[in-house]
Image (cartoon, rainbow, N blue to C red; front, side):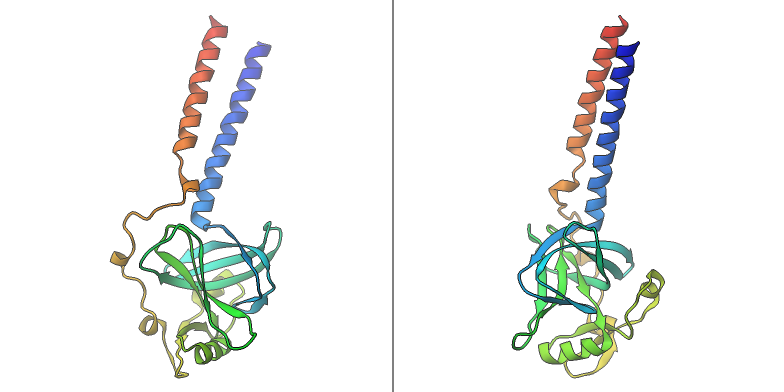
Length: 220
């Protein structure tokens, strides 16, 4: 009986480890968790990040508006929660892609969009209105903007998003940056290899067969 209890304990612990690993992989696939290193200061909505290593992830989505969170390297400290809208690129790549707006002189570059490896869709960051007007003028690009800086999930859901143009005009976001049409998104997007569940399923199968064999041997 002691041997049987030991075997059952080992099997239970192994099963829990496999389940935990599967959950962690699924969480990473949704959040698109990414560790990036900036070699120079980078502006994000609301602040400037010093050069260093950060973890960026998708926290939640509400239709055509997304919430992105930025942590320090090991995720022990939340640095910023920012609003984003969908951005599309024609060809996905195998690498993380960060797009920046060019800035004059020695001013920090501003983070414009983030694309996760293997995906057409990315996150385009929304800046506070006053800053968006300045960025649009100096970069000659249309910048998504909000009147105020949201601080709660409810504010992120309801805050009106507009677009500031290089001509210093405010236009509806749908007019300046149309929402991606469904057909422009790859129907079978390539997921990162870390999202695959096949190795875990195979491992669980091997464990189950081994357990059944050992159990039969001791019962006989």
